[in-house]
Image (tube, rainbow, N blue to C red; front, top):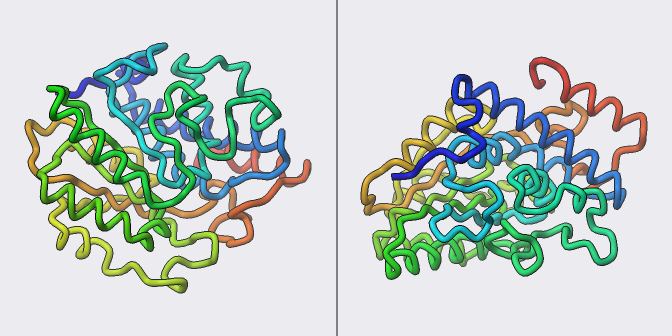
Length: 289
């Protein structure tokens, strides 16, 4: 049985409010860190802020300060270019020193634009080459089965990542081997590097495709913490599941900063000082736009 993360238990009276606050904090940290190299993936990080906050502060089985705890849940960041949103969480869990964040991407610093499992404690898979994360998560689940462990592997995939054939090979294999401890989450923000995902190559009907591959399929508003928390906790608490599950999280790229939302040019960019102040002001509003 999966237990809530250590940090989620600290505010058990109102976990939704805590997770919402953490998502807002993630966005602020993304802006702070990208100001160091002066280029980064704001919009891709903002679309998955609630997903990351819900996983780490409300769902995943983790221990503070123990990134290599054998029974921990695993996390694969398929859209690894948004790793700037993950690093503050790893510091918050005492997996890496908080001071390391202050030299993000600088020469000799372990935190790069993409996550490196050989240099960053708490990173379970080195990603950035799109399409491999689900296969890695599947392999970890199958190894856990052989070793008598019951952790869950979560793979956060971009919707543009659905263009990769290896995603579907892993999906077919996971269903065939009845790997029920594998959960894929698709950040369905509608955009990839080359523009609108479905203009580049349509992935619809996405839910029906995953069902046809033998997966349990759930669709949620990817910015609604109550919806995310309900479905992800339900999946984490299944007893001996025989089918892998996918959560299609409908999101907005650049969520929280109106001039970034669904603007293709913000896939990779930099905020000048005035725009940074505007962005932070939007993020600090009681309700995100």
